[in-house]
Image 1 (cartoon, rainbow, N blue to C red):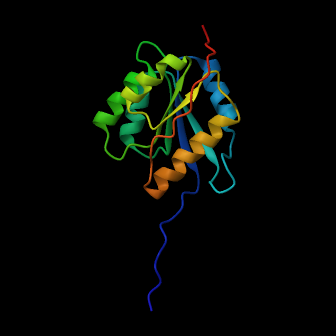
Image 2 (cartoon, rainbow, N blue to C red; image 1 turned 135 degrees about the vertical axis):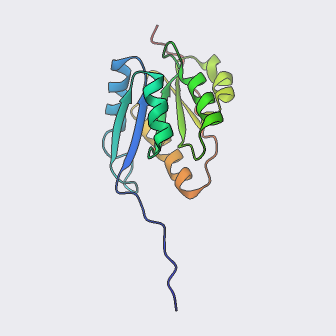
Image 3 (cartoon, rainbow, N blue to C red; image 1 turned 90 degrees about the vertical axis):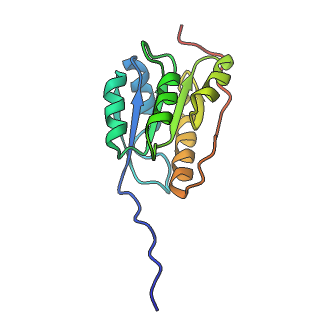
Length: 154
């Protein structure tokens, strides 16, 4: 009798964060830490300050989640999420960080898988990222949108 083989679980999660703001990249890294949840492997974070660098990494593959700052210039996370969704097959989950509640409709246009508020919330962001990763691994990824907070970095 042959045993059914379970898919191999990753040894670690590779997360990308895209923002032109080094302070925000630091906040995301600190909020996510090395372990998102007990049922997921440890996470490593790769930081990107420019769209071309992130695009190259996503096209190369191997990322488990991409976190995008909607406020980044000159190419914001919303436009980049939309572009990635159109260009990349087998795209990892995209989590969009937005500063204003009114940007939720734009986040829907961007085709991001989830939206999290700015400033970075160290409680909700890891839960949200872990949730989209679990759904992606199970093949059941759906939009897991949080209402963004009213705070802004401006």
